[in-house]
Figure (cartoon, rainbow, N blue to C red):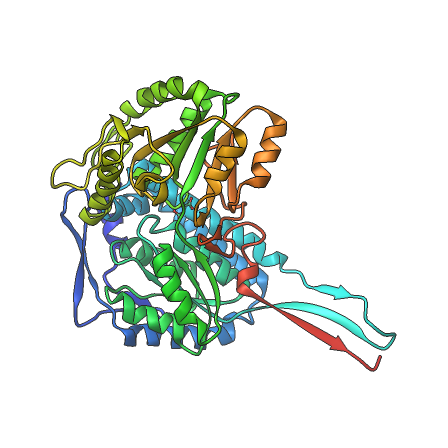
Length: 482
Ligand code: SIN
């Protein structure tokens, strides 16, 4: 990767109405692996957020009138540029977020896949005709873009979480304003640079970078010209944002916290289940909403499962994501490290046993991949979202018991289970109260599938043929006098 290529994609200010904006103040973006400064970025104010919404509102007038084919072609160009620059974008993502560079490039391709997907879906927004209630009436349903969409996105997927919202919005004919997490604004700004190169018109995609989360958040959720607000992040923050949207009765879609159960039945292929945990638990150092959180293992296979898991976990290399062969990068910051440590320490105090790993490296953001046994349903590691590389293992005996335990959570995003019994596969899949279920599979995320949760994990779906619906309004036309 050429240093020059990286420099051309590092931008230092918000992107509003096709212009790069400086601000009176800046904030630092630091590499979580080394603490080094990556860039100083303009710290936008609520006035910048207002300007971005006004630009998006103005741009909506023309963007919503483009043909689906025109939007598809621009999105396709954006996708092509993301793929062309995947290595550089991945490198930049590792610098600000920490994940291993191969995984970061994987995220760029994952994000780009949503852009490609929605470039294609843009052309498939079909309406309906419905038999009329009387001979002189005809009933027709059309779909129209909702309008200006605003978003707040997290630091764990600085590219893909923007891509799957923005691409759907733009494909539907909406315009878009996003505030990326202040830990990781650079990937978002690089996406805007490529969107501009792709020819996406000024005002259609706007990025507001800033640390004043509450002030900017209020504008994004309460501005009268905003039709829809979408958020990926914690359930706590999501509730506040939903409440802020309530007054204007905005359309909302929320992708919030998870607490994914991972069930290993006695008839499972144990090696496959161990591989499934490695993929679903240790991806992004455990910092994803769909990460496995509670691993329920049948009593009869518990010990062999734990042994095999430790063998695989001990092979994971922790380090700076830019170094060769690293599988686990740093956590995003010290607060995150301390949060994981607290859940671990409190569970150990209640009787859980660390059988591998178990500690952050002093003062750094690195947390050793860890395996803990003897976890019970009420321990913090089972109740809370861990968001770190800790496998918490519980034992069970009965199918009905483990389904009840898996469902005993306020969250309902992802669940996983391993079994080779086809009857059990259907029974369990149907009873799990989660939006996504991996069956003999730990990697469930892809652009063609509907991503989203139930209960306090949120609402709406992203990606897939369902993902456009949240950005479209249904209008019914009743034609009389025929
Ligand atoms: C998330 O952690 O919110 C997203 C994970 C994914 O898209 O797989």
